[in-house]
Image (tube, rainbow, N blue to C red; front, side, top):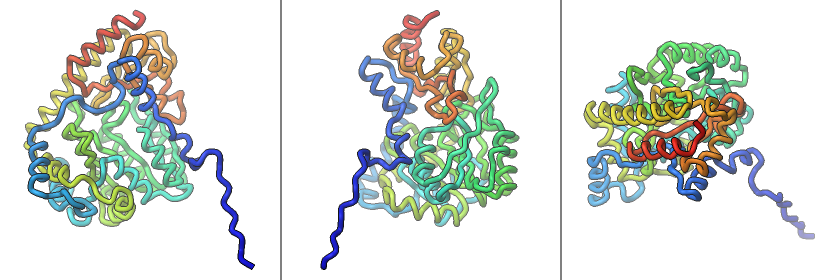
Length: 398
């Protein structure tokens, strides 16, 4: 008799349970609220002006010349991989083989997720500083790993290195590092990175180092890649972002560098995700990485001016401001305004003052760590920042 094959029962919710917590995003909630009430969106971290014209020209030329209009090489066009390797040598003294130690992806986000999927297996622990960027949690869930948070603590939200050491177990597989750090704006010092390196080496774990904001550091807080420390190159995947370095976030070109075995693992996963990334934009990013030092200096100076404008204005409104050392973001403690909960503050702010920001608690498993803190994006035109401050001056208690 023929075998009867019964249909598998369907769950009421088709989403697999481990991804349920990632179904909604605070960015989506706040951006929708901004659109609903006509608020200025200082929540999402993207510039409201374009980057260098020469990168646009390079992308247009590549399109017109027919370069990159069809599938580029899966791991990145040779010109971009060579430019990435030269960038690592030029800025950090790191020797990277462009043939075997570089991978190009659809934004830094895809490379981060590919690295997690490549290096993390069922039940492996990924230790990261909390608050953390939200895609980290989703990536760890995709890999069926377990996330372990370590607080950014103290009045200036520095990494708690003793807590990092205490968090390491036999199941720890990866330390997921982010410096310059989103959302706090902290740039890890050489001493802090050296202690992270000691812990990684002692426990023989990998490091995935998200350095998307590597060129967005201010004052004397120069970014140092952890891969440049002794004993770290061979265990670190370093992530870079063309979108953040050149203000073309919509082009979604990012990359990873590291030792051949780790990059081979990341390549194995990444080629089965987007397969390839925008070819003409890869030629443009190769051009961008070769821009003179003056570009990067002017880029930082412009963002530092915007940082100072927003930070001083938020302080004048009565918030305690943690002046960022890097990234696009200012963090404030909103308790001086009478709010104990940053999420409640952010939900009230658009209707009350016509401005949107993001609460740190959205980036925490232990929401008490981020409860009073709010992140503000300053990568906007000065006129937009000034208008946002004026709206809050009129709408907030004070």
